[in-house]
Image (tube, rainbow, N blue to C red; front, side, top):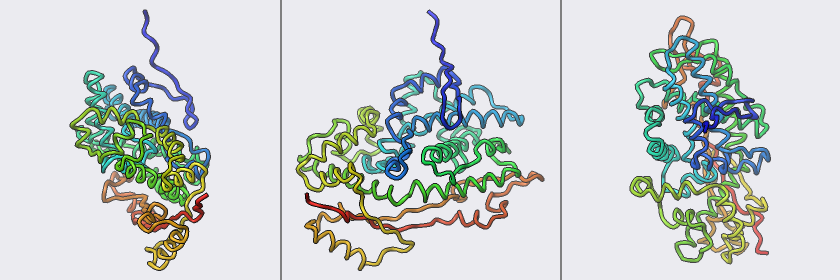
Length: 412
């Protein structure tokens, strides 16, 4: 019996036809761990603002893998030796870079788990897949961790100019319709080069990098940190917080077993490392579990939980105020008085009024920098190579303080 053809071609709405380049990658895509990403939206609650923002981590991972293949093809074309094993490993690493995301991606990252970053879980799942695939992911794991002796592979996977960012900016612009965030990913990739196995950008790509950084800043304020998204995310976080409390009081029983495992205790990375049961339970969680729970909890007799769930289901979102400075105490007290007048007990106000701060920095050279290779082969940081003063300004962390509250809360 002949083996099935695993060199599949997929029709991607952003890039057109993209291919599954190897049998290993095909089998990883088919694995239940990766298929779960179909059920996790890329942008969390952004669909409350942009109705088309329904794409998933599954879409994004495949797109990033496609761009990785293009980047390696570019570097090979410039005379850099990259063997087939390295090429496949780099594509595997970027394909699986988000496999550790939980429901609603970043929104619930620290609400369901206790301080466990999704990249830590991605690495644990990659090790488990490596075990299942009899050591086939060893090189990909080294690249993902940054321990491989050729650092540019890790830079292509995780840096300020990686294939992850290239795809999510392209894809998020496409699905939200925010055309101002469009980047020239194809041109940027064509401008990539290596110096001493470090990733650099040719000088003629400066304008494309400038546009990339400006687009990223715009997308954060207009999409990722949009005020309506902040409201919806705040409500979801308070729902999970209230569910945790009720579970601890044995007053909430209609919870999926896998979700209850994480809401009934503070699960840390150490728990995952010590018991495979946690990792197995985590791979069963997705957005559907949360939405099904919210629908069920909207009928609960706890006023706080049911009110928040009904409001989110019906898109009766919190009111929000933004400021470049922390809010005066008098304003916060006035909002508290409004909620108290509605009959909300003082010790439960925090469920219906949330304060926070949103931060945005498009470029952080202190973490890792984008290096431009001038025509005379000198290497300079993009902030020094660019003629635009705005590029230096993008290195500043901008903060927007917010307070959102249930202005339209009713007891009916």
